[in-house]
Length: 142
Image 1 (cartoon, rainbow, N blue to C red):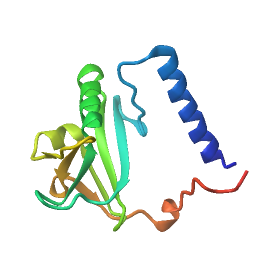
Image 2 (image 1 turned 90 degrees about the vertical axis):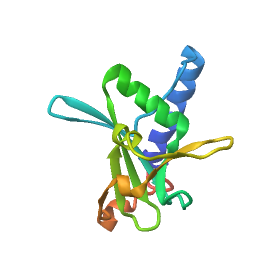
Image 3 (image 1 turned 120 degrees about the vertical axis):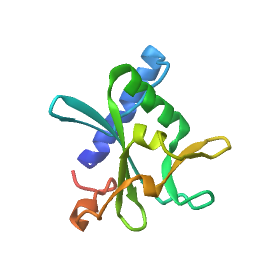
Image 4 (image 1 turned 135 degrees about the vertical axis):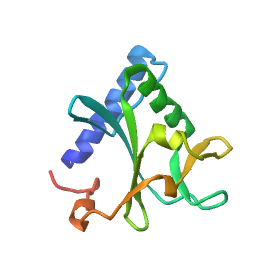
């Protein structure tokens, strides 16, 4: 079993334990938390294909995650950065969630609504070197 798989197993166990022991109103898992100077930031990272028009070419998050991240920012001042690795081009799109919320966005309907933001509202960076994208959860290394 790889160290990555073991780590994931620990994360799942912690989520179950927290839910059973404390019955939280809301349970979030940050992908990354970083600090620049004295300011802390939270990163929500996604690896997904762009949302196709209409209304626009975009990307986003499940609506409940948007609301939860913005609530966290209001209550704790922890600003959320949305990081998208485009599944096709491997380009990186990123922007702070509060900046995205201040601009045009679209909510899908259905059982699992998503909030979609135009790609034009994101900063865009080139793909990472390929060696950084070979992360393999199914590795048989021990």
